[in-house]
Image (cartoon, rainbow, N blue to C red; front, side, top):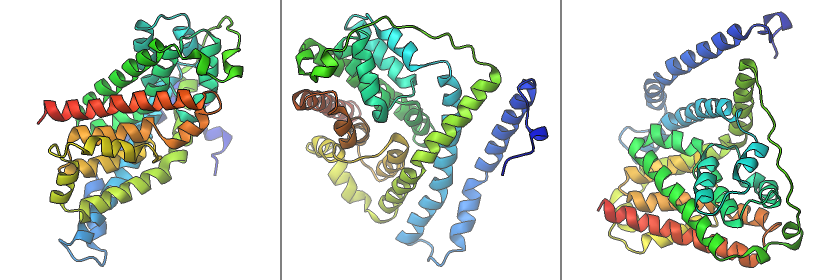
Length: 350
């Protein structure tokens, strides 16, 4: 139910919008600090015997569900405000005319902060190619945008720690940069679909975005409604899977399958992750549970990267603009990079 018009902050009262936003953030922190006590109280009143596998799973689910959803809401709102400074046209203009190498780095970094995922892969891909962005640079952006996004980094930072988040950022960017550069060196422009290859490059105009404080807050609210509304179900599924792993999967078994000593585990989890579909927010509770059970960090990060960056639905979408040969090269180069990251990180921290 909407508030009466007289109770809404008007566009001539930005102080009310800022004040309401600050109050909402403070309320968020007050609720967040009580989640652990509340989840413990809730599980204690369930007909579950304490200390059992089901009790452990229930505690994980009862605590992580509101925690992850609240964290996601805060992160998405904040990044929605940040994203109000970007646009598809501005991003395309920043990359147009960039040479490979520097362009790959710029594209991967922009992919972290810009609001694009596999759903927008086709229009963004066509827009980049038509603007004269080199194919390899375009692929660096295409890999980084869904894989190394602010939601993944924010949730990893809070749930697993800054070291894991920083590692994921560094290695994710490396995969995007190197993979894009390799694809660019192969000169596969002839493997684009004809209608994409024949698109005429034109001048890219950069719209001047002069948004008010209120409009930027509204952008954050809209991003929160859109993204959280689309992914909350995947998050619950991911937390349920994480709860099962946390409560029922023996630590020794998981460590033997996904531990550092199992040389085949990295390519195996990448092969398993490619046909799966999830977003960053949905897979992170699973990552949290796997690490808690003793799985090797490099193996877990490789699994996460493959699920997010090489999902089957994205390949189906990209088929509209790429030939099957180019999709196979794209998936193969990225998969090799992800496997290399998994092995390298496991070796560095063995």
